[in-house]
Each structure stands twice: as C-alpha cells, then as structure tokens.
Image 1: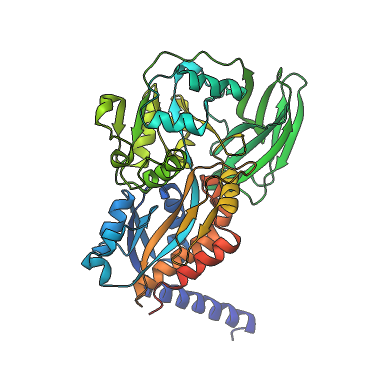
Image 2: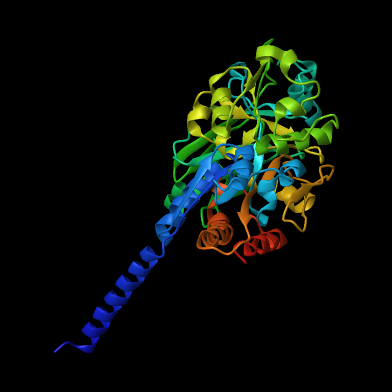
Length: 455
C-alpha cells in the first residue's frame, strides 16, 4: 500500500513531467535580426530566455538597415533597429501589407573609443564642438590646439591597470566640478554580478592604505561611489580583494603630431543616433543610417584617414588595433577587456552642464530622464540643449519592429520582449553596458509590446 505522502510525490512528478512535455510540445522558434548596437545585451538575454522557457529565439546582428529590410521581407519575425523606419521605406508595398509597431526595450550610451598610445593610458577629454569637428574632418591631428584646450580643462586621471583582476568587472573614473571630488562607477556583467553578490567594492588610498569609499554588491550591476580625493594620491579600486583599476592624476600629456583616423559605419542605427547628436552641435549634419551621406561634403576628400566598418564589433576591433583611431560604438563594446588591453580607451565628453562625463549606464539614464520623450508610435526623440548635472549626452534607445497580427510566432515575440523589459533588463542591463527602461518610459514601452500579436 502506498502512503499518502508517496502518492503526492508520485503525482507531483507526473504533473512536472506533464508540464515539461507540454512546454516542449508548445515550444516555438523565431528569428530576429538587425541592429548590432544591442547585441551584447540580446545574446545573454536570449540564452537565459531559451533556457528557462524551452523556446528557441535567435538574433542575427548585422545593422539596422538590414533589420528594417529583412523584417519587411518577412525573413525576420522581429527586426532590430536603432533608427526610425524611413518614410520612403514605409511607402513600399512590403510595409503596407501588414500592421507593425515599434517596441523600444533597452537603451545604451554611445561611447567614443580611441587608441592613442602616446597618452600612456591617460583619458582623453573632448568638448562637443571639438568632437564634431574631429568627425567632420576639419580637425586632422591629435595635437590640435582645441583638443589640447579640452584636455587642460579636465584634470587627467590615468588607469595603469590594463586588465581587471576580477573577470567581468570594469571601472570608470569621472571628475566632479567641485575640486577634490570624483565619481567612480563599477560595472559587473551577469556572471560577475552573481559571483560578487555580498562582496565589497573598495577604493583604497595607496598613501594611507585606507578606504575612502566602499559599497557592497547587491542586485544592481552598476555601483556608483562619490569620493573625496587628493590630487597627490593614487587610488586602487578593489572588488573582493582583487584589483580592478589603479588611478593616478597625471600632468596634461603631450599630444602627438599624428593623423586622426576616423572610423565609421553605414547602414547603421548607431550612426543615425550618433549623427543626430552631431546635428545638435552642427545643423549641417544629416541623420540617416549612413555616415558617408550624413557628413557635410562626404568622406571621399579624406581618403584613408576615414575608415568604414560593417558592424559594432568590427568598428571596436579596428579602433583597438589601430593607434591614432577614434570611433563611436555602444558602451558595452568599449568595455571589452581584450580591446582595453590593446590600449583602447573611452573619451569623457563635455555635457551642456559643463561637466566632462563618462558613458556609464547611470549617466545616460540621467540624460534620458531629463531629455527624452516617447511619441504615440513608441519612438523616442531627444532634447539635446538640456543642461543636466551628471548626464552623458550621446546614446540611443533600441527597438524591435514586430507585427500586430495574431500568431504563435508573434506571441513569442511579445513574450520575449516583455520578459526582457520586466525581468532581465532591470537586473542585468547596467552591468552589460546598457540602460533598462523605467517609470513612464517602461509603461509606454510595455504598451507597445502589448500591440504585438494583438490581432
């Protein structure tokens, strides 16, 4: 005779087996593709979603233009784009044969990676006007007086640690306008966050051997520490006793008489958002997906000094491999330790408040909350003149294009995007170099997701 407890256990196993079989039986597959900007967020999110649900979501990273084109041609169930679908595209027959919606699901800062070995690890500081003239080709040398002026305006701290001893952890140092103040941001990728929960981040003054700031890792994958500093000290950043970075104030470095190599992309939503920023500085810039069309006068006059790359990883790799190069790419691609070990660094950009700001997730979230608005279609537009303390002014909100018609595949598109926004992004986006949508932004984005497969 089987006891009641054993019967319950047997029934429980049977129900679990039944649920697993049902889940597998109803597993669906979808393919998305397009924008490479969100790829370092999407790939781990997709892996976790597939693992926990039994579904099969795939994403091919190949630029926003392809995302728009292949979604309209029904090659993708969802099309990734960081830019608006052009009115000319929307008039094409393919776009009018079905109803679709923008679904914004995550955002991210666009960093300015560069490699300039002559700086010996010192950080480059650039005002918006200097940055625009580098990319329009009128500033051609790294020792240009305007770059030197920007560098003198923002005290230069150098990180002598080329590779973090704590895998998946990275740090950014940012001066505050008040003398003797700085902000340190520590980012943890998902695996580092899981390992580091409950561990302590400390900033050690190497002269006194005492901590001037500390924080314990909890659920947030980006930690922000406000510090009182001395220009004569060196500061070691540690996580669980392992060194992430070593910062020291250096004299304004001598800039080399070297050509600036500008690295850009066409067919890219990152380019569209980058160009929207440049257009806010100089209205002669275009704002399409193609840098070669947006730049005033085109790129042909600059010859080999301007180099095109086809994706975010390729652009970041080119900069990391080329002394004298500078480009633009989503922050997470600049965080890669193998690229940083080659000498790639990220510039601090002067915002409209007058601060030179690093592209942390928190700094771009500050910009979004003060300067971005979502329209009724779910598309986000920016107010660049806003003067907001701590805001990093360059970035993008990224979208999936999805169909509103009812189907099992569109149901999965909706499920994945909703899960990404509500479950995955709040815990892991910051540590991956991205910004989760929050508050009224998140509510509007979820409303856009609800339109998918609504019938």
